[in-house]
Each structure stands twice: as structure tokens, then as C-alpha cells.
Length: 287
Image (cartoon, rainbow, N blue to C red):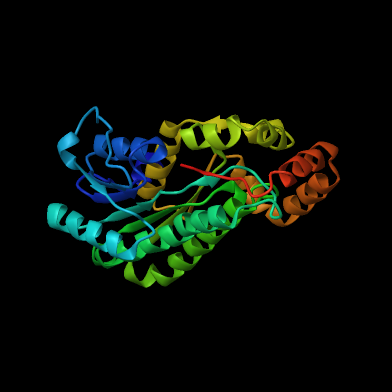
């Protein structure tokens, strides 16, 4: 059977994307517009993205995903403008500069959690009445760090594991309403967030370098967008990019034991973690 026969068109659908002013969010918005969808971008900074085509189909709004009142107001504006919401893509998220638990900043950790978990929850909840009414679709961006050992970046890994649980639970809660949920697992996407949190940090680079080379492959924002939109069109429960991560996830009960033991005994990993231990509360968020 042709793969296109399994796809549901997004033409004419209304999608809300948080964190859509740049990176993966902006690339996803452009792809949806190219496919005939109408898109509302909600971000702390109003989108300056110049769309190649379909700019009239885009509504750009300022909004804070951690503020329930702010998100409710933004969603109301989307409904006033487009009349409906079919798809919500909770893309807004941040990372923090690497550190151990002992050396981490409580302020940075709390802010990261509020955005990556609370913000996702708030976004979905604000959009659900219209998504349910239209038997629509929810997309949540988790990470391969939902099931990899997150030593050196535990607040981020914990937040993505929480998003995975939200996706699983929502898939069950919303099934009787005809709403489907896609949880997306990326490894490294070549965005400003990765450049700031990894590429500018030699210790983080060395720590990442302890993973097998095939699992350090980066994807582009355009490739990430294609995976997200493909998940929507096929209403897939889970999407992995690079695809090899699907196998790791399926075998996580075994793979996790092996990787955890390797990292606990690997001299390079332990040396890098000791360096992170000396950061003593310094930290910043990247998005």
C-alpha cells in the first residue's frame, strides 16, 4: 500500500505551535503552511519568521506557556481569528548548561521544569476543548533522554521523561473522544539551543562523546519538522529521529542496564562529571 494512503491531509486544519518563533517550531510552522494548514504561533517573542508561502495563513501571538491566564487569552485569540483548533504542538522548551545535581541551580532547575513540563501541560489543557470538539491531534516533544541516562543534565532528562508520561496518559484519556497523541523523540537537533548548551561547553561535548558514534548524529530543524508533521498526518503514537532510536526505546529495559553500567565505570564520563560537579550553582537556560 502506498504510504500516502495512510496519511490524513492537514490542509485546512488549524494548528497551534508554541515556541514557534525559531528553530524546530518555525520549521514546523512553515511545513504545515506549505501543506495548506493555518498556523498560530505562540512564543515569548513575536515571530519574525518570513514565510516562503502562505504568510496570510499565519497568526503570530506573544504568550508565556507557564502562565495559564496568558495561554487561555492566546487560545481565545486563535479561536477568534481561525474559529477552531485541530492540532496543538507543544514545542516550547529549554535546556540548561550541564551540571550535576550537587552543582545545579535551584532557580534554573525550577524555571526549566516550569517551561518543559508545566508549560506543556498548560498548553495542551488550554487547547483541549477545541481539539476534542474537532477530534484533533496533540503533539508533545519529548527526547531520547526520556529513556537514556541523564547524568550531567538530569533536570532536562527528568522533564522529558515527564512529557513522555503525559503523552502516554493523554493517549488513553482522549481515545474515546477521537483525539490522538504523538510523542516525539529527537536526539540532537541542530538549533541554537544545542549550540548554546552543548557546542559552547567543552565538558558537555566530551560527555556526549562517550555515546556510540551512530547515536550522536544530528538532524536539521527541517528534518525534525518533517517527522512531526508526518506523525500528525499518520496519527502515530511515537516518532523517533534518527529512526534508530526506536529500536533503543523498544529495548530500553536491556539497553539502559548496559549503558548505565558503562557510564558508571567509564573513566571519561566520570572525569567529565567531576568537572561538572565543580560548577557550584552556575547555570543558565537556553532555548
